[in-house]
Length: 169
Image 1 (cartoon, rainbow, N blue to C red):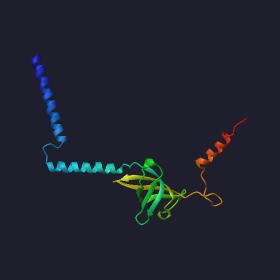
Image 2: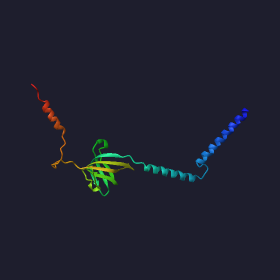
Image 3: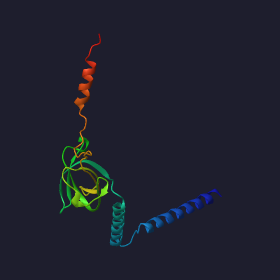
């Protein structure tokens, strides 16, 4: 009796394993024409490539001063404001559909001029910095038309030295 149970279990396991093996080979296209399998793999790679293209590229921000802009080539050179962005000028290809604004108002390529302060949102595609959003800022002037003066570090020190230098008697 025991021999029959063992042989029945062995037979069932053999059938299950053969079915799994047959299913695995059928799923992988085993035994078929190899050229068809290779073209199917190529289509899968194309689909993966298209899925990668659809993912948005990470956006970066650069802040600095516009060094030069070539309207005909839509090329912009920016001198970074901080050392964290590097000491060398950054080059950008401004996209045709880039959003451009000067002092918060919508602008065009022709409004980009050297010397303006800029905040550029860009993506890196195939090693090229591509500007998506360009915010430009003209130098601020006071109501009288004179440029506003930033307080210097020396102004505060001179006031403190005269006040603190006096002795009380």
